[in-house]
Length: 77
Image 1 (cartoon, rainbow, N blue to C red):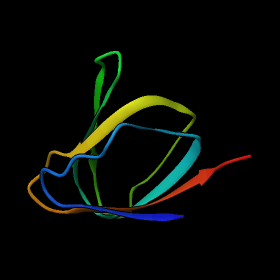
Image 2 (image 1 turned 30 degrees about the vertical axis):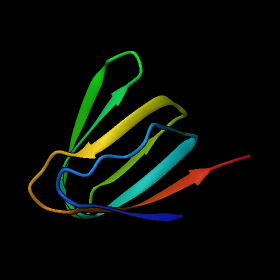
Image 3 (image 1 turned 60 degrees about the horizontal axis):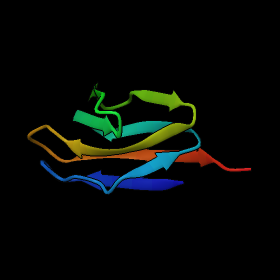
């Protein structure tokens, strides 16, 4: 389990994920871009939960005005 906190404008390095679930502690606008150029976003709200399967390489950033914070649990074999 990881606790991720991203100040406004903070960007992650390129990474991947296995199967994952998460829970939002501090909300805001979260965006990510895949290596193929596709960009997605999620307007996170406190208490939101999310899940996803394996993801290809991407980087993400806090596109909002406040800090984002969420728990992320990843399932490895």
